[in-house]
Picture 1: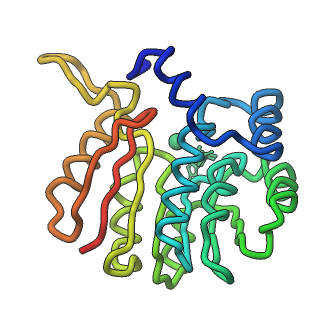
Picture 2 (picture 1 turned 120 degrees about the horizontal axis):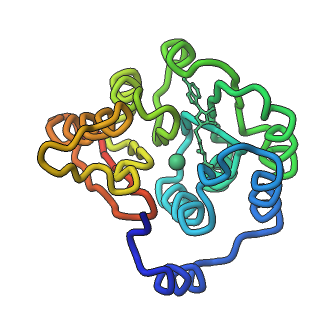
Length: 214
Ligand code: SAH
Ligand code: CA
């Protein structure tokens, strides 16, 4: 489901700073060689992540769900000098490709790319995080939030992607809800009711929940 008129989306992209050669290459190679290329953040969301990060100027970012590194490169570009991005992914088949992209970004010394199950890795990380981007297996969104919330500094930002789930968060009466949709509905409700954060659900691309730790 497209949330905005494709012509308007094209207009938005035409008025969003363009992707550089590396981001274009990541997109191209993801489309050519990797399953589910739609998962990649892409031009509009990538630039938004980059500009958010440049506003926050984080010392430490945690990304859950690297995939082919598109969002990781965008996030790393906004790090404070000497800052660090820790990015986690369970899919080791993409490792060589992703490490290559991070090398090409010129930021690989600031990117700590770890392979493994984020559910196992996050408890070993100490924080504090200035920014967390949750973009992995949606059934674990709420668990990731619980694992990181005490490691986010007050005033820190948590972003969670795909919270509109192609529009499936709108459930008609009597309609059956699949597992992923249920997880996203529960996650959005949990954030909305958690007094530790103030939040806004941004209807950008597939929906981004932005929560600021109070
Ligand atoms: N953030 C990327 C897209 C991530 S796609 C971008 O915007 O470009 C989701 C990723 O989450 C996939 O690469 C998948 O391998 C990873 N993932 C799924 N379950 C995971 C888990 N339990 N631990 C770590 N990564 C996981
Ligand atoms: Ca995503």
